[in-house]
Image (cartoon, rainbow, N blue to C red):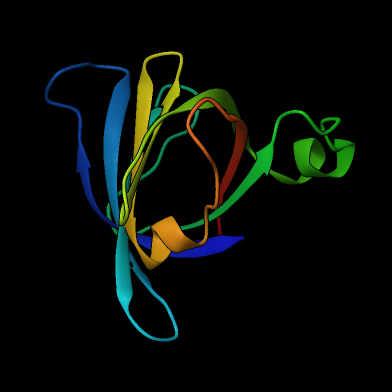
Length: 119
């Protein structure tokens, strides 16, 4: 589970999709997370605090997660670099850097479920 604060919300390319930019602080360093969400379904504002859980979609979907979190996306890891991880959720993108990347130990092609909620 990651808890992060939204530092920017951009919807300049789509009216219903926003790109959220978030900052994370790890024990030793910082990281960032950029994630696209459908704001018509999951409205998020600048300054919101998000809780994010990423799990392998090969596991059975956990009913508790579906009941606890407001928004869920299924996707696949597209590209992995030393300090970056790129995931596509049917065209909605996520990029994790720094300590955020180290929290996510997936390989290219891995299936991912992302659960989000505003706390």
